[in-house]
Image (cartoon, rainbow, N blue to C red; front, top):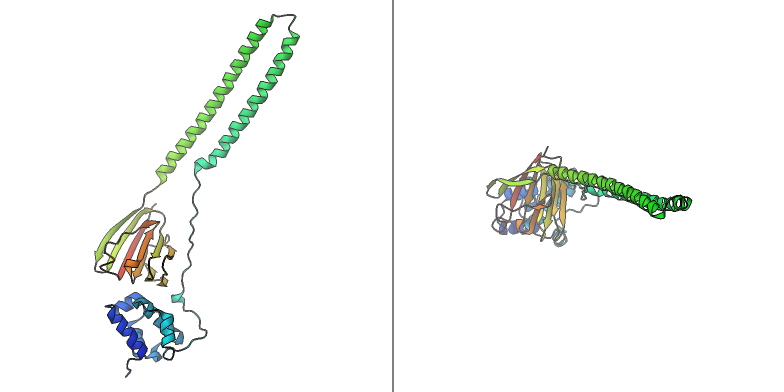
Length: 302
């Protein structure tokens, strides 16, 4: 039979002060209840290894709001020392990409081409005007003795004006065509945009379920306003993150290829959840229920 150690007694008193049962703590930390009992009783022989003893005690402390480093220092004679052991796969953090490349606007892509066409046309018109003026002067000098100046000036002026009007008309038609294409592309791009729909499906006790539709991506971000303990799993129960998020920091995970995200929160009043940058509104007041289990079901838009 084992009796509570000083460390075990300290942890148990803190847990009970938080109003948490061993079942609640098991759900928060995902540590089997028998190991939690072993920690409180100081029965470390039942643990799978020394590393697990320290890791489980650390998770226990974070879940009840104690500083693990201070606890290890204060009760270092009660906690087994570990120098190097392989980090268990289930405790490893999943590194996620935190940058999402933005799609360039089709209009921006077309703009350099349109400007290039306008510049080329402008240069061509300028060259044509200079050459025409030069040729007109040469023809005037050659025909001075044969035709009156007034007739030559009138004919040349009319011919130049007609050609200039034709070039202006062609340039305007080309610009109008390019503008129409840009407008059509913008309309098509606007029609392709789908607004996401994040709605509440059910809410009971500390459990709430949401449904995400109308989006082809699912980017989850959990931000801290204090130092909450958070556990994140996918729909198959695979642990993707577990631990305390420091104040003003966040944890981001891409769930685009998943069907469900489950967020286990120790202090909901210090935690904010964002889905594709849209803030999730708690259906259960985080001030009334600080420990919450939030499930988000994802149906990818076709």
